[in-house]
Length: 327
Image 1 (tube, helix red, strand yellow):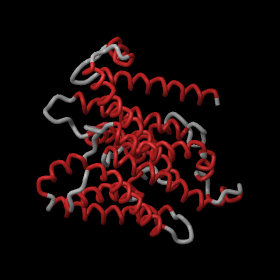
Image 2 (cartoon, helix red, strand yellow):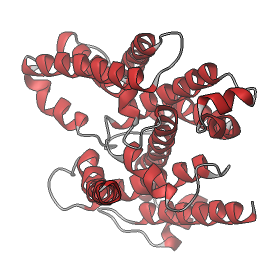
Image 3 (cartoon, helix red, strand yellow):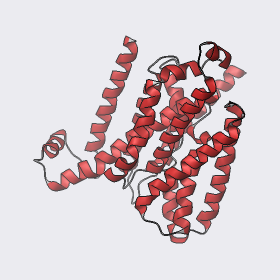
């Protein structure tokens, strides 16, 4: 228990340090003294705008999105009992992206409504996935197949709409690659609660999640309603993943890779396993977003590209290690 508390404390300290560094670095460099002056109201107005209207909300959203995707990935891999499961398998990622692409391509809509559109599309896809997967109980194989089927339909529809979206196509392609450019406090106010609440609930009920990692028969002998709790955790996953996608676009690899990193530090049966997923995921996405901002060029690199570059080699290493073990 003490070791877990120390690990979470160290992780939180590293995360806070990375957040402070993300405020310092960018097109305009700030010293710790300048940041303190701006925070206390003594700095110039331009510095305050750059730090607290542009960089701070973007960095907080990077932390929340990374934490949500990593937590959702850990839950999906546990419930599906598949080390290659990710939040994408619930169908909500493709559903949220598809809803936004279709609405932008078909009608002229105020951008303030796009978060609601994406949220509705993601939840609709999640409900469709769970409905198809339900056969008296949540079966991991049916869940994966249903998620893949719903995602395929959404991606196909989205691809068709992109062909006819005209001038909006380039912006939509950039958004589909993932990124946090231009996100501010308004979007954070709208969707932050939909990330925080499901994530905190899963932390508080992590003891139930750890029971689900056991064999179903063993979990039932312990008095746990396996199907009910699987469905509950999948719903929490769908909520936080949908909100994360609406904020940052369909950012990949975080939910798939981070649980593998966490397993090398902690056993899944530890109470701190899900919170450590959140901390590592938040740190990974914050660093990726910082690299996206610091990359020289007219247009910043999409966040999804950087997470793929960071997570891809790790995933290939995991696959090669697994192949050796199986051989």
